[in-house]
Image 1 (cartoon, rainbow, N blue to C red):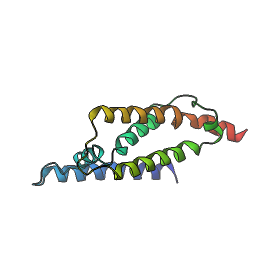
Image 2: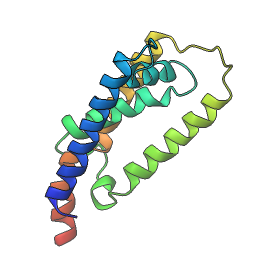
Image 3: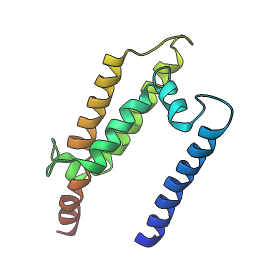
Image 4: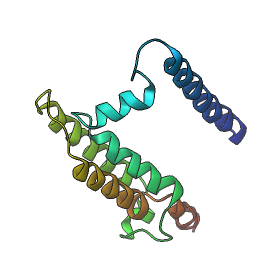
Length: 137
């Protein structure tokens, strides 16, 4: 897939989300926009969303020059697999929570920071130069 194709997909998705959010914001129902629904989900059994936002923030926008463990350089597939396992466990745990259970703000912050650290140190996009170099030599 070319970079241009990826850009079209990303910008189209962002544009669609903005348009849908604007439409939902001007309808007659209150608090039904995408951001409000996702926020409400994250304070209940879908608390993994907060962790994922942290992971994506650390992965895309931060990132260390070198991973915590050198194994992540030669085995680049480990961090996404580990992330999938963690999220699946969080989903399974969240399904067991009571319907009226609310995650406290302190735990939301902890989930966000933990995800940020995972994305920064373990699944950093800045490790790609090391991966390319290691695989080519």
